[in-house]
Length: 218
Image (cartoon, rainbow, N blue to C red):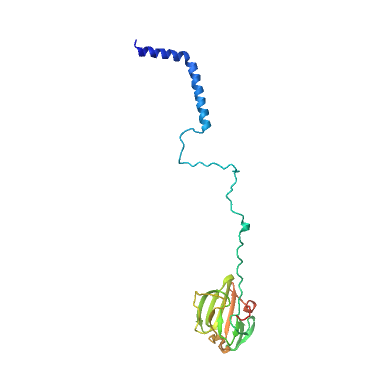
């Protein structure tokens, strides 16, 4: 019998005789290993690609990233109120009348008068309020004219102007800006001489300009 065989038999005999005690030692070692891993939190290789989020000590589970108090913010600026001024430095020669018929000397007939006629020594015609020129044109009944669209659904129309208009379609105008000059180009009122026939509407409905205008010189 070789020495290696004899040694193996001795080890086998020892393991068989003391197997119970060896099993206890292995169990104790295993429990100790588990306790050590639990204490360190190291149960295996860490995944470096996964971010770890550690809650702060005062994390109560509520979202602390909230907007600041809006009460300290400046309030939105108030919308500018429209204030339509008289488009000429002159006087009213014919008032608005949509229910009572008035005499039209040029056409020799009674009819409604859907605007206000102004006359003045100064023939200049100004934009009554800021807006956008939506139409510039000419026809025989109205003469040369300019239409301006304003905020809040208002529209102003300037008829019986001279052909030398100072604005074009698409222009933005400011209150008091020169649009043109009065003339007798409005064929339906040509006998009235140089004057401005001025009309206004709100949301497409004709209104009396004298109920809206501030009649004062610019």
